[in-house]
Length: 355
Ligand code: SAH
Image (cartoon, rainbow, N blue to C red; front, side, top):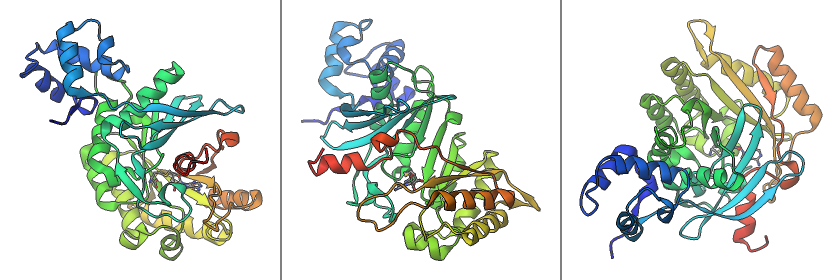
């Protein structure tokens, strides 16, 4: 049997090519109708302005890979919703819905598991199972819009997985998010977060897609960074920050650096001073320091890592040291603290059957 077409993965021109050729042989405008139905979360049986025979033919040979909501945890503190989503093959990923003043934001997963091996991260503990297709990433957004009955205006790729380790599908997902007739999410409202796969950062810059790049830096030098992030052995800090500098010069878009504060590992005032001088050294152009921002995130404790969160005092001191050295830094507000909204842990507990 032929595999069914993953129809939600198709870009508008690809869907048009499919629909206008045999066995469908439909006029072009049908592709536009189908695209907009799909992106609103409709099944084929709901596409009421299509001929019945076409709906039946599509249902026969295509699959819509929107995941199903398996579990939903709603924070009583701030309305954050953490989803466990079941993919069509039974694997699960997580997504987190957050309400901000600037709009509803969804944090999406890009892989089932992760192979990057960051020591503090729950998502990588049992490695990578598989990449998500672009349709499945888009399906996370569609599922959350449908479940909440609200429109999502911002997407952050900070869920399970390393988006740039699934580069082609990530770029396809970005193109789908912003495609006319679809969800209409402007790429300026989308953040791609990476642990630092340098060649793919350069590829992403070359696409010209106006996304925000977020770099999980987490340490001020190679010694400290390699100790918690194995990717640093392949792409050291100098190469990573060199790519960040070139990203800014090519796109004009400022970079966010994520820095998770881990007690005794990367949170001393000396670490802060070293971070400030390293960022200034690399993120500069002809004597001018390029615009950038550091987000400080107190570590979410993950069982079995032996790492723990910095004290409130250490966080404050770190932040003040950076600011006094001219680096803008904010301490991330924790959303959904009562539902442990950080990603990775719900999937693990579901896989271990202890939900
Ligand atoms: N792989 C991508 C995106 C997923 S992780 C990346 O590395 O950027 C999203 C963010 O959460 C990253 O900055 C990651 O380093 C951070 N993170 C992972 N585990 C964490 C934990 N236990 N506490 C705080 N932040 C964590």
